[in-house]
Image 1 (cartoon, rainbow, N blue to C red):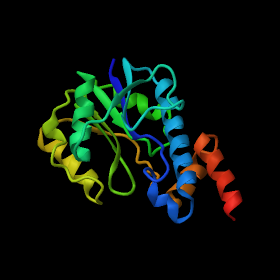
Image 2 (cartoon, one colour; image 1 turned 120 degrees about the vertical axis):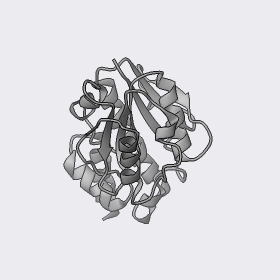
Image 3 (cartoon, rainbow, N blue to C red; image 1 turned 180 degrees about the vertical axis):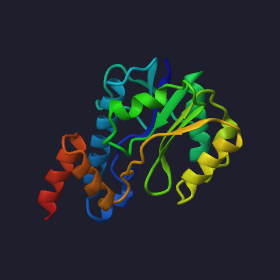
Length: 206
């Protein structure tokens, strides 16, 4: 059975989800980040996996549930940190971020099954990716991929194909980066903590 990895930042005001602060205060943005992380970790806990590891920038808090290992992120660019996260798994792994609170066990489970696949790729609608699964993690598959640019996903997927891997795709999801993203995701997943908090904050700010 494969490992589920979540790479995330601790939800500290002013240091997380700063692009939301065009509408929300830094504290509110951090609250939304925490809700998104809690929703993500709940989905991870409900998904059968050998290990569940949170690779965290910052200090863990009460929002980390039992059953989740916490490991600090290494230094370096995002490509370096993703490669190091995969190294923690010591075997097949699926890695996701904290920006998709709409994720469910049903979305995650296929990406942990590498029967007939060497890699799983979950595209994000902003040109990035929300999930990456590797049957045999290799730093060369990630290092040097330009991150947080519109072509990130295309470059990453091409890197997998150029390595001769059989790549299967997960559904495209919206990452929560902007207030418009937050509104879309909250509407798409109304039963999440994220949606509930978003609704309450919007009611206050209107």
